[in-house]
Length: 162
Image (cartoon, rainbow, N blue to C red):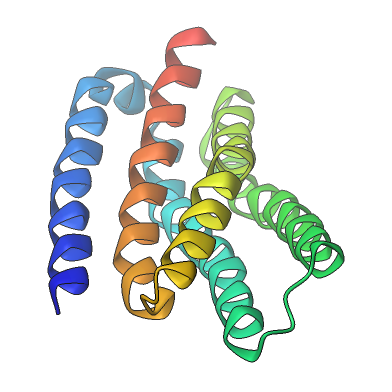
């Protein structure tokens, strides 16, 4: 119970921080409304792709069949899935913009967040399991909130850089 309360608290805090990041880049987003159209899909995609990795890892850990080769395959599959999903989600911006900047910003935010999040999934998953805590009960709220914070932060940085 304590683990769930901690992960839910983290979820609330990071959700507020992700919202603050969005507010800080609202002028840039308003210049490119197609980013706002793609944002829900981008955040959902990141949560889904990251959740798949966490779920697969949890299953392998519980079954006692986790090894480095399987972990490497899971990570490679996660990166490929993220690349494809980021490409699909970012393509939503094309009909709604006269510029390709929104396409590239959304694509890079989605794909790069995947790369950043992999160690933030793998390391806590393994540590929780080794401590006897069921990662399945903690990783969901943790992952969705971390995904939102990282993805919106990268979106803001990329809007600022480009």
